[in-house]
Image (tube, rainbow, N blue to C red; front, side, top):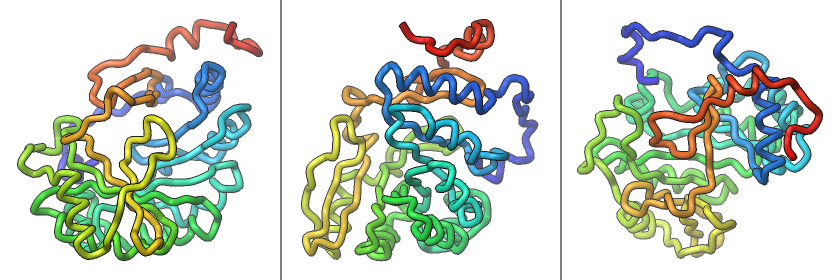
Length: 272
């Protein structure tokens, strides 16, 4: 959430409208029974949720949930990495748009620098939350001059930096098409200093195009969400905190699952 909007009259959801951990786990169990095998906790910032390891443990206990992962800004990760790992979290994705403190502060809108993020990444690695992915949104004239440095910093660490085209998400980022650095430009900038070559996708529907370093010291990913949309192959859905199911990041409304779930009795097997 950008810092400049804190002065506005934000209406936070009453607690009764937010899904409990048990409700999230119940819905997740249904999704897995219907074929989902990867569960990601995201936000907002999920590490702000009190007792988050309790939710992770409930999700990790679902048969067939093969991959439990979390996306975070890593500000609170250093102190929470071990409890999350102990609860059953498999891996994490961290948002880090630049190693330059001033650039990073400008982009995160929160005023904190990279030190706590890097400390969180190191702690997560020590705890075995791997592979660690680092997401960097690339905005022309803001952080595009720092992407090679970011790639070089994590090269050879087994962490995977994924560069993401600047997207029109929500209505507060002032998105303009001329601020997009295309995937082709990103690849060319990195290849000029750290030679890379295409790598095969890990699975059908993978959103990041993989590129491996020619010297064998790891890989990067590039997400071309603007210049090469991947909607036709998208296999993702999002469950909001108030229990609405969205099948697209850009959807303006979702399907209410909270209401019907709270009206229905809990059963051992809700499918079939």
